[in-house]
Image 1 (cartoon, rainbow, N blue to C red):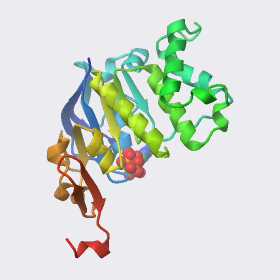
Image 2 (spheres, helix red, strand yellow; image 1 turned 30 degrees about the vertical axis):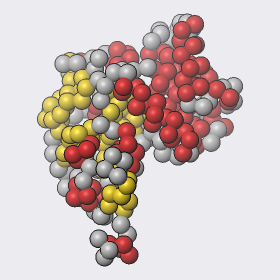
Image 3 (cartoon, rainbow, N blue to C red; image 1 turned 135 degrees about the vertical axis):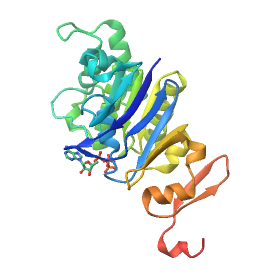
Length: 262
Ligand SMILES: Nc1ncnc2c1ncn2[C@@H]1O[C@H](COP(=O)(O)OP(=O)(O)OP(=O)(O)O)[C@@H](O)[C@H]1O
């Protein structure tokens, strides 16, 4: 079980806060999507939530313990972050690269146990990498390397997953397969937080949203009450219209030519 509590949290760079301080609690079993325009601070917030950046004010608590007090290796077993950009720069195989995710569970000088190796094979199958397990990771395509980064995080097997634009560069098949997988993780009782640019993926998968508005204000709450035309226009500066049914809304941006028809 995990609870991530943001207590009056200010996040940003060089003492410049990117939003009004955040106070909210995210719990096991929830699937959160963070939405906001480019530069609104989604990546910066995620880095702050895993302790890679210090808060500019306030605190983050993991199960009631201040994140800054949790040793790195313990934290790595509890929270995993998929960075927006990951370079696979070394000539290791896909299997060797994904296996690195297990070292949060093993001392570095010890070889992997059978159960670690089984986990590595399992996550490579989930991410469609099993057929290329012996290929050199640094020679694969951008989307394949993205899947290696996701597989490495899933091998780490944390109970809180923070995923920064996880399905960018993925084809539709892998996008759907992985969003479903992340959703299963939340249903299994983990906490999943995903930054997204695709409102429709957020609407389909997330039960809770954090909206980071351009003026530094924010809102958090259940997706069904926050996904409204007014809020999305405030968030992105263009009108979006809901088409489809109430049960399965589909959001389309209205270009200039379509706005007069509103
Ligand atoms: N290392 C850094 N030093 C100083 N400023 C930074 C640094 N990294 C990001 N920023 C600034 O912080 C702001 C937020 O950036 P961030 O990457 O968190 O936004 P984002 O919402 O993830 O954007 P995108 O949707 O484009 O990925 C931007 O104005 C960016 O220029």
